[in-house]
Every structure is written in C-alpha cells, then in structure tokens.
Image 1 (spheres, one colour):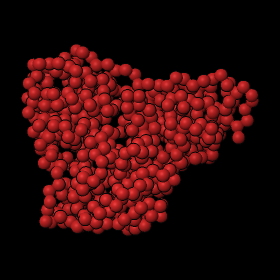
Image 2 (spheres, one colour):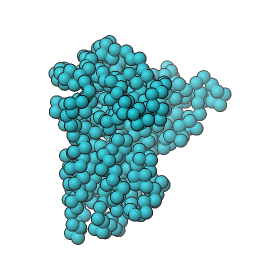
Image 3 (cartoon, one colour):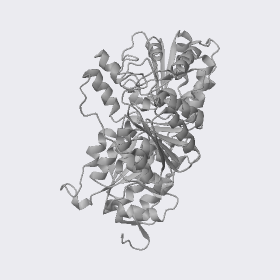
Image 4 (spheres, one colour):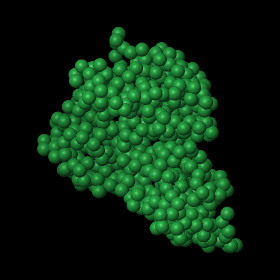
Length: 564
C-alpha cells in the first residue's frame, strides 16, 4: 500500500487521473505486482473499466483493436497495462501489430524499482531499447511530478501523424511516491489539424484531367468514417476506380459503383493488371507496404510509366520507399473532404470505375460447383452474408482461412474489418472481444483457423467473464495451412512440421460456457449459424474441412503436387 502524507496523492492516483482526463474509458491488463498501485487507483475510478485478460499478448491485441475502433474524429489510443520482463515481451506482438497497422495504442509497463535498475534485477528489461524499433516513442517516468507531461505526450504521439504505439515504463517504487495534490492532469490531447495545400489539390486535379487510366489505393493511417464518406463521394463523382490496401476493405463501401476490390494476398488478377497499367496512381492513407504492393511490384518502386500521388499524414512516409511525383502531407479525412468539395468541370468522368466494380463483383461472387468440397468455405461465407447484419464486424488473425472472408464477405459497415496487416496469428479472438465491448449493439465474428485460434484461444475466458456477444468460427484443417501451401509448392509431398493434432473445438468452447456446434458440411454450417444467431453470448462453430481445400484462390494440395 502506498503511504502518502496529507495534501498529497500517490503517483499512481495521478496517473489514473491523467488517463481519465485523456478520455480513457477502458484498459486491458494482465495484473502484475509491479503496478499494484495503479490497480488500486483504478479501483476507485469507476469511469474506467478494467478488463482482465489471460495472457499479455491477448491484452495487447485487444488494446490495438480498441485503438483501431476509436479512430474517429477524436481518436483515442487503446490502453494496456502489463508487468515487466515476461509480461512486456508477451505484449510486444501487439505493439508490433499496432506499429505496422498504424493504430494508436499505449502500453504501460510496470518496471523494476529505480534502485534495482542496471543490475539485471528480477525480470528487468531495457524497455526503451527493446521497444524502440517497433513503436513511435518509448520512455520511462522517473519523476512522478512529470506524469501529466508524459501521459499527454504519449496520447498526442499515438494519435498524431501516422498513428501508432507508445510504450511507457513505470518504475514500481515511483508509483507510490507522493506528489502534491495540486498537480493536475494536462488537458486532453487531440490530433493536430493538417490542412490540405490548395496548390497541391490544383496539381492533383490537373493530373486527373490528363489521365487516361487512373486508380486510387486507399485505407490506412488516420482513416475514419469521414474519410470514407467523402472519398467515396469524390471517386463516384468522377468514376475513379478505388482499390483498398491490404486488410483495409472497409475503407469504402463495397456497394459503391467504383469499388474495385482489395489488394494484398490473393487479389483479383484483373485488379493487379489494372494497377500495373494505370497511368496515375493516387494512394491515400496507405503506406504502400510489401503486402499491398505484392513485394513492391504493383506498382513498382520507380514506376517509370506512372505518376504517383501519395497522400499521407506523416511526411516521413512520403518518398521513403516509393518515388513520388506529388507528395501531400495532410490528414486523410481533410484531403477526402477537400476532394469531394473541389469543383473541376474540365474532368470528364471515367468509365473505368464501373468496369472495375463489375470485375470485382464477378470475382468476389462464389460460383456453385458440382465438385465443391463437403464444407465449401466460399458457400459458407456467402451464407453468412445473407444471414448476418451487413454491418457485422469481422475479426481475423493470420492464415489462408482469412482469404475466404477477404474475397467473399462485404465489409459494408465502418469500422467492420479488424485484421492485422502485420500478419500476426492469434489476433482474431482478442480483437473480437474488444469489438464486442466497444460495439455491443453490433454482431461481431471472430474468424479463426485452428492454428490461429490456439495462439490466443484462452481469451474465451475473458469473453465469458465479461459476458460479450461473440460468434467464433474455427476453421479446422489439421494443419498450418498457409505454410503447408508454400511447402507443397516448394517441396511437393514432403510434409514436415505443418501437421496439427487438434482438440475438439466445440467441446473446448463449451468448457468456457459457450453455445457450440461442430459441422462438417455446408448445410450443417448454415443450420448451425441460424441456431447461433437465435442465441446470445459466447457462441462457437467448429468448421471441419479437408486440408485439400487450401485457399480461396482455389489452390489445392493435389493441384500443387501435380504442378511440382
């Protein structure tokens, strides 16, 4: 217990006051003795919900997802508290995802006491060195009187420019230091205004007017509902084809007549050709990372026959990797609004937007086949579209299983896609819990693979504890399917290290108190989904498929072996 004199308060109490002042209403944690004083201060702060998780990686994923869900007009970072050493290293996966996904997050880490530092004390880690390469700012608070300064800076850093994670270490003894009761939190931090340059806008519309085959690639840093609505209005007005960056498929309504589909792994081949042969590429919010650009080939880094316009809130991203003819450092929502309101009557609307949308509709619609497997994943996702609300939030981790949702689901609501661009397994269940807590009025689905689910399946206990409404789908093919696909391509028939022996996932779900069902045919899935929708709370469907059905692209084990 912190022993503080009258007319003072503990540093931990000041810290929690600062969290509340910054608009924090929920934190995710695995408790540790290194920050017991913070947990005690939270006990009296009823406006902040403390969500106790089962592993620090799950807690960090929840905070990362919560930050993604809070990226509105006044974005707030997701917040996690973990202990030193093992807790912080477990949580590092969530920090890495928040960094690569450009999502605002703050990880507070209980640290060794100040007199123990630099002696390799119990669970001691140099957190500034450890987290520095994968976050925007890593710091330690040694002086409790500076807590308001550090917390305000952490929030401002997390939400400004390219959003991302911040890590703050809290020495255990510092949290019990007494501070003057008059020390108050700083005002809430807000994302700085980043207006659009009118001259740059004039140049952009000149490029559009001269283009024969333009395309936009959107989604990413700072994207929000305002950016979505205004950019869609702008693109539709001029018939501009719009592709979404990897796992940013909710950046525009899929029903928009100019939506061209998603880039990343397993995209529509016709969309790839459209990007390759575009004479003008307008990237808004997207970093144009390796996954979105197919290894920096779509478009190429120098793109000699293309003009690249890159709009991003962080000037350090502009020209960092790609040769850029017109870089614009501004908020993506401010850019989208300016583009929607800009009038240039010299531009003749393009037919390409409608053509690209028709190509996507054809590619993203499942075709019945007499040779379909017993449990046809394409048919199952199509059935979900008919049976679930259009604004359902779909959360997934990494694995080939996710490709069926990326191809056949329609991300109609905003936000409605929580999926790690960093390709981290185990993200889906924690992200879905965060989404269910943040949006209890909406249907939330965790789409997982068998290997993916068992990375963080223990967080079903968290879901049960907090009574969330959540549907979990476990696609079980008894393999690390993505790696198996690459293995069959490179070393056909030589299966090594990719086979899995799985539990009965339906029984596992039931042990957490979930309604659960195992299915092995498409019709059984449809029936189970209807039954699940008539229930509430935690629900799990165990989808048993054959490993032969490797990917939404149509890749099969036998097909890859035949090619080999």
